[in-house]
Length: 121
Image (tube, rainbow, N blue to C red; front, side):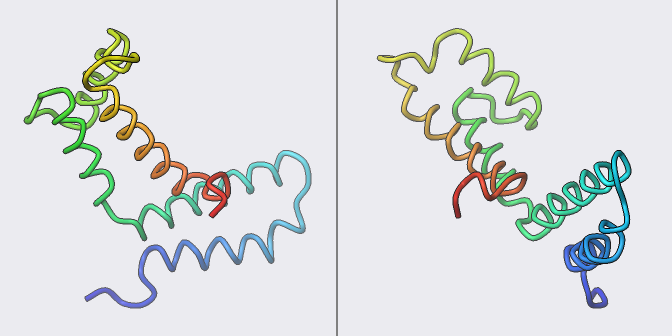
């Protein structure tokens, strides 16, 4: 068992310290740089809290969409991009609904981690 606090909580504590104690003292490029670091820390915190289930589900869904059960996520996304460029998501195509559903699900998941405010939740 890990000692408390765990990774996501440690990142959150460190981010809060930077926000309240360091950020107000900075200006210009240093302030902008710290804001970028704090944003990266917030994304990492959300990723740790969410675990790998969404990424595993994305891989399984893409494998089914591109009929490549053994490929890894990067290659699966390449194959999916090829299918999309070849028109598999065009109106009237049989896989269109499944492709659009997958793309929307992945978009929401990525926004939930990178910019949850954009989802209005």
